[in-house]
Amino acid sequence: MDILTWLDGTQFWHWWILAAIFAGIEILAPGVFFIWLAAAAALTGFSALFIPGMGWEIEALIFAMLAVASVVFWRSYVKRNGNKDDPASTLNRRGEQLIGRIAVLSEPIQNGRGKARFDDTVWRVQGADLPAGTQIKVTGVDGAILKVEAAR
Image (cartoon, rainbow, N blue to C red):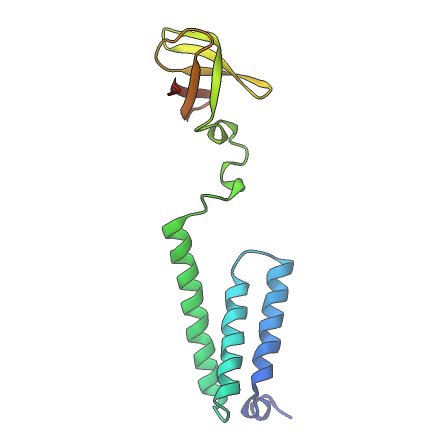
């Protein structure tokens, strides 16, 4: 049996097997790419199930259009919404992890510089002059120096 004969008798479950293969590749090498190809193959399988007798050319065209559409949709979604909740977005950038946190000044801010303790680390802070013991909120990071303001 040659490939054209096999393709001529393509059935819906062939697409589901391809979808399972793509999903398996995504599990082994995650990158959020093959899962969209798997979805396109599964949807192509459903279209072949509900519209029997489609030629392999039409099925391949449906798969190609769904694959491109799903990948383009995902990339535009990520670009538009970003990965704000992804903990890896601040991995190895400890200062950025502290933005929005409130602490108490351990040393006063004088001439724009002071120190505050966050968890088990004392950080240098920069902001308006404030006495020790004042609650501060981290508003930004400049290298290893936290930019702070008085907490309200």
